[in-house]
Structures are given as structure tokens and as C-alpha cells.
Length: 164
Ligand SMILES: CC(C)(COP(=O)(O)OP(=O)(O)OC[C@H]1O[C@@H](n2cnc3c(N)ncnc32)[C@H](O)[C@@H]1OP(=O)(O)O)[C@@H](O)C(=O)NCCC(=O)NCCS
Image 1 (cartoon, protein in one colour):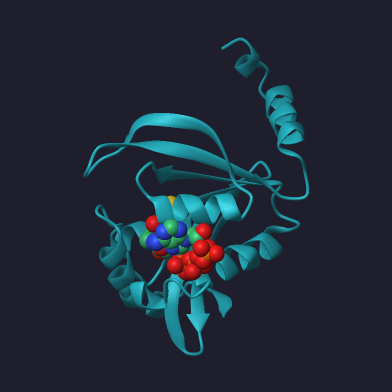
Image 2: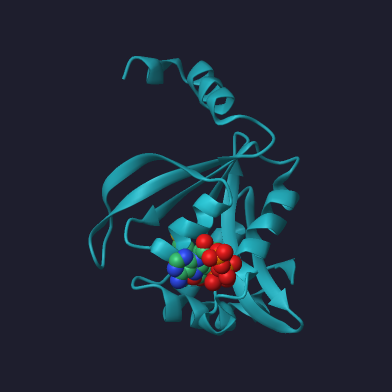
């Protein structure tokens, strides 16, 4: 597998996967806007010549926020999700110190994968999702740093957080 920047030509397949796996799928416009956003990183997961999945996120202050990630149903359970995240970790090596994400509490497959890849749950966001309404786990994965060092860095740069 390889990660390739998302091009317009990939979008119809990406939307097809998105609709197959999410109860509240992103629209084509959501992907177009994500691609245009400053500091965004958007890849398709390519297996031979096929688009098998995608990863969308953006980097802000040494943090990569994973906004969207999926593997097409016909490519699932073959280790591709894990390989994709490993490739993302490599590509982010010099760009980010931590990866953050939200995930539905009921999404056991994704939560198991994230835990296996070293993500830790740091908070629960109540009623974060709609269709259906559901809480989100907020998970962090440190890259080349310890989670405690990252949290200290965040508090140092945002003194107002310490008093909340
Ligand atoms: C979550 C997702 C990306 C996993 O992709 P995948 O290619 O099937 O995952 P892998 O084959 O690499 O599995 C790696 C690990 O993930 C976990 N996992 C994957 N599918 C699982 C399932 N159905 N139930 C429980 N754990 C699962 C396991 O820990 C697995 O390790 P193991 O094979 O040693 O048990 C895929 O299911 C998906 O795209 N789901 C729909 C979209 C989604 O939920 N995205 C995440 C939004 S936050």
C-alpha cells in the first residue's frame, strides 16, 4: 500500500467508501474544503491501482488532528488500517508531536485499532456526534515524545487552561 495525496479524480471513490462506512457521511464538498484548508494533509490509501481508503487531517501547533479515516469494507480485516496508520506516523515524523482524534464510543473496531497503535483515551466529549447522538472518546498518540511532556507543553503555551 502507499499513501498518495487526494486528487479530484479520487473523490467519487472516496465518497463511495464514506457512504458505505459512516452513518453521517461527509459530502464531496467537505472533502474539497478539507483539501483546501491550510496545513491539511489528505491522502488516499492505494493498493495496486485501487483506492482502498483515505486519511484526512490537519496540523496545528505540532498536533495532527485526524478528522477522517476509513478503509473500504472489501479491504478491511487484512491489516490495512494498521499499515495505514504506521505510514501516517512515518510521514508526520517531522511535522507533528502528537496525533489527536475523536471516535464514537460504539466504534469498537476503530477504538481497538487506535489502542493497538498506542493511542490513549484522555477525555469523553458528551453528545459530540449526531445521527445517532453519541459521546466521543478523545484519544491522543504521542510521536517522538511522552504524553505527559506534550500535556505540559500545552499548559505552558495556554496558561488560561491551568485555571479552568
Ligand atoms: C477502523 C478501520 C479503519 C479498521 O481498518 P482495518 O483495515 O479493518 O483494520 P486492520 O485489519 O488493520 O486491524 C487492525 C486492528 O484493528 C482492530 N480491529 C479491526 N477491525 C476490528 C473489528 N471489527 N472488531 C474489533 N477490532 C477490530 C483489531 O485490534 C485489529 O488487530 P488484530 O487483527 O490483531 O485483531 C475500519 O474498520 C473502518 O474503516 N471502519 C469504518 C470507518 C471508521 O470507523 N473510521 C474511524 C473513524 S474514527
